[in-house]
Amino acid sequence: MIDLLYDLAKQNGIELSQNQLEKFQTYLNMLLKWNKVYNLTSIRKKEEIVTKHFLDSLTLVKLFESKAIDVSGKKIADFGTGAGFPGVPLKIYYQDKIDLYLIESVGKKCIFLEMLSKELKINYTVLCKRAEEVEEKFDIVVSRATGETFEVLKIGKNLLKEGGLLIIMKGKEVEEELKPYTTSMKFKGLPERKFVVVQKW
Picture: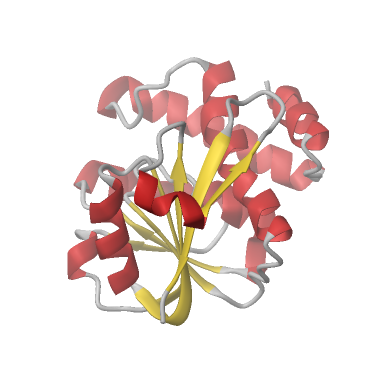
């Protein structure tokens, strides 16, 4: 199944090393195991986890490239991360280049994310609280499928440092007012992906 991720990532111009693929395999195994008991994600089939979670999260790599966004040394927060998307796949990809924070208010998901960090042997910080309660500020804030866009915008901008970037991952529908800030990208193996990119001034 991880071969599928390797092939699809490669078709989309994203090279994954053997070490990264092994981490994704561990992630997949752990997610499948925990999902049986804790219902972390509604997506349960291995192939769909690989495409709709892992590959979809990695589309941010191509967005960063297309917008010439340098993530090295940046503090990145993923809010409403759930079972770790898109934050953990980004951390697997960028490794020590980024300082990752996962913001999640559901206790069982926080426990999963803490355990996952140990299993994957990668470091990130889990902030087990509502995004509105987080006082730290970040260079880049990403959010995927976390509710009404304008609410996400308001909360996300509060988490940003001055000059920081908020990136909201959307499916087909983007509100009219946000279209000037929206980038549409096509990826093999996925439906069209839209990114709303807003800078804080």
